[in-house]
Length: 358
Image (cartoon, rainbow, N blue to C red; front, side, top):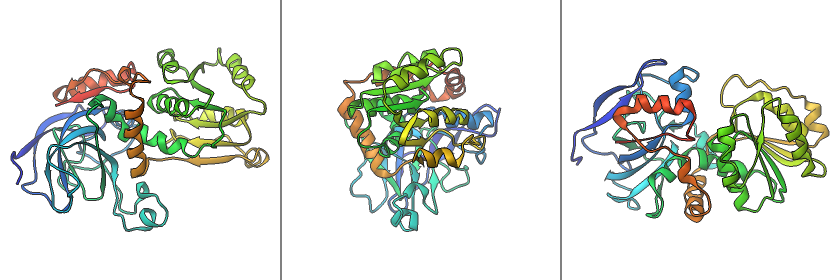
């Protein structure tokens, strides 16, 4: 039985509208394999900022937020591996485990019955579907990862979105990479720098137009490249000087389709291009089939990730927390009651992630 009967939640009612604080009932009991979690800390993802601004459409009313760490407060039957009191994070999506994407294709993140936390209406199930709340109800097909005691909430919260996604993305790069270009120094780009640096890639160029973001790149093993038009010609030559025939891989994590022609120019014959950031309709590409054919290029897209990538993300943080200053990426937490203020701070972009806590 659930010990308390309501959760404190922040409800999104529409673009341009402030979040609405209210209480929402907790389920009186859990169904099989469901898990009720008390949120410890959540972080504000760029996709949430897009939703609040009206650049991304989500059902309303809803509880947004999908990056979080929490404590288990109740467990439904059939989850003997999870116990009350466990500190956990979880996959951004719930999958059925039975459809072709889940079984034959190895893509549970593209499940036929996919449910995404922070992207569902209040009238969907319990309604406790997002992380800007005191509690969230995790569904039976959600993969759970226990958080090691040595990792802080702030380090782990973004792992179930940005870091797990980049774990998936870098796995598609050639095994013998010498030079990689990352287009964008947001959190995806910063994590990409750390992942590639840790595996020994010698030349990791990270391009961005924001000096504040570029200032953090070197601390994560990357080489900052000023992407502003007046600065970039020299930087282009700097990148090419590190290679013989061009770079081995390019990862687009900025969400800007205008970057693609430059990425194509930088790639060597047989190079690999990963599209990760352009999850929006304004992503028409200036690209010809001939460019892809003549260079023998491989293009791939990454959207979300599988359970194994979240496992690897938490393990990577545990291995490398002393090597990279992850703590500098996340703001001190705002109270959940001040979520509207936290969203304004996140919009300014001074932090890679802004945190909220109950």
